[in-house]
Amino acid sequence: MYIIPAIDLLKGKCVRLIQGEYHRQIIYEDDPVKQAREFIAAGAKWLHIVDLAGARIGKPVNTESIAAIAALGQLRIEIGGGIRDEDSVKQLFDMGVERVIIGTKAVNDFEWFTEITEKFSGKIALALDARGSKVATHGWTQSSPQNLLEFAVEAAKLPLAAIIYTDIAKDGMMSGPNLERTRDVVKAVNIPVVASGGVKELSDIRMLTETGAKAVVVGRSLYEGTLDLVEAIKITQQ
Image (cartoon, rainbow, N blue to C red):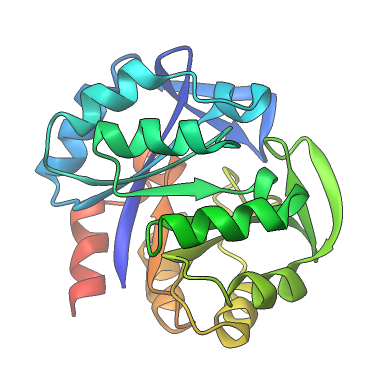
C-alpha cells in the first residue's frame, strides 16, 4: 500500500471541506506548489488533487496551480473535479498528470465513461464517492440512486487504473476511515482500490493496510499534524 497526500484547490489555495460542504472550508496553505514541495520532501511519490471549483461547475478551473505542480516533475499526480468531457481529460494529461479521476460523468453517462476508459486505458480512475450505500455526484452536492457496490462491480469491468472510494460522512472529520465498507469494495472488484476519508493517525493507516486497499488518500490529518507523512509512508513499506 502507498500513501497519497491530498491537495484540494479552491481559488488557488489549499483547503479542506468538512464532509464535502463548501461553506465549511478550512484554508491551510496559500501556495499549492509550496505544499507539494513539502510532500515531496517527506517522501511522497503520489499526489491527489481535487479541483473543488471545477467539481461545482463541470470543467477544470485551477489549471494554473495544477500545471505548476506537475512541472515540478517529482510527483505522480491523480486529479479529479469537474472532468466531464474528453477535452478536459486531454488537457490534464498534456500537463503531465498521471491519471484522471472521473465521478459525476461516470454515474450520469456510463456509455461515455466506458468510451473514455477504453481510449485512455489504464489511466482513468473512478471516483466512487458515497453517502452510506449510495453514490453522490456534482462535487458531493447531489445524491444518486446508484448502489455503491453494484456500480463498483459494473465499473470494474472497464480498463480502469483504480477505484477511489470516499465515505463522504468521514471526509475531513478525522474520525477514522470506514474500514468495513472499504473492505467490501475491495472484495467486490478485481482492480486496485484507493481508500479516502477519515484518516487521523498512524493506527488508521495500519488498519487500512489490512483491508486490501492499494493506497490511501490523506489530507486534513497531515495539515493539522495528527498524522506524520514520513511515518505513514514507513508503515506502508514494512
